[in-house]
Length: 496
Ligand code: SAH
Image (tube, rainbow, N blue to C red; front, top):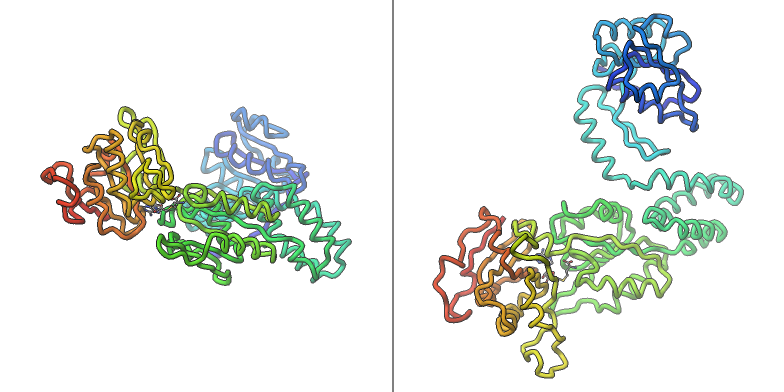
């Protein structure tokens, strides 16, 4: 079968005949009813001995009887969507003989047109056809296009339409006009609109239009999206993160962001690595803040890409405050935080009836070996007693190098030494390692690990997916005197 010729029909004021009164007919009627082209729908006529009540509501006219040839008089388009196969073939023959457009669902040989799979972002419509070869493939493609197109795209089209006259007046030259629209659509104005700030986008568009071409980019001002990249697995990016990444001019990213995620960045976008690791600060936070402001003010669409969620131990709040103070538009795109990603990847429910009524996210960063309450100004006050008392799962971030300290503090504050713990290194990544043991051995369990690792403390750890558990040191190892008795890596390691 040759590929079908794509076109969009304006059906307003035209008569569309639907032969058939059941579910199939109703589905076609719904599609037609929404597609006038200018707001006025098509005139829908239904002919069938029995008609679904909803069809009666959509149709301008219902003829409750079998199809007759004269039903085709004055008709533009026909759906033969009834039950009987013979009737459908007869309707199709008669319609074709009159030169009418006719569709028989699932029978391309009888049809003069086929129905595409549709992505509807009214007034923007994407129609997909596989030339009738594989309706399932068409539906899968539709799902991909659905995912790639912002939900607000239709509203954006309407918003842009509202400025067409003004833009034509200010920019008489066609090339200048096209360039202006490209800048608006690819740039911060559309980004802002799609992020939900319609008033801001409006204001910025007017400003940009009045500023004239030369100042165009600068007047628009850039925007920064603080984007959570999740714990590693690119599949855990949100759809919005993906879209924002693909639109970015500049991507400022951390060490924690997986290379496979950076593959989604546009080829011609600039990437700036500002990775920080515990001991060596490549770029200071002040420098990062200044960089974001500078790039945005130069008119660029900037993505600040962070591991996990930007607002969870990610300094996203600080960057947002600096950008706001500088008058730069900021959008926040949440990500899956390490605790949530690691929990899913190991089958450990963070809350579970009877085992944990809550989950507490804490950072061990800054906890020093001076000991709590020793007056040391360098140790932030972590209320270990409160943490130990909570009948909660504890998710400890940045705890690897402080693992034995954390265990000592929690046990001293009353947590049972035998409390199950899990250390998850490189969670959700191909090299994920899961180590399970008890709180009193946490230091040894964590020793030797180098990747980003999350510590989970609590009874829920006993629910870890057995398929990912090679050995359970809770039951197989002799009870040690202390951490030091256990050589590093003795806990079971289960790669996924
Ligand atoms: N904003 C991030 C956390 C940044 S702090 C988030 O929401 O996840 C860095 C700490 O996060 C690491 O020290 C580690 O404890 C944790 N972490 C980040 N990615 C991780 C991963 N893939 N596996 C295990 N822990 C991870």
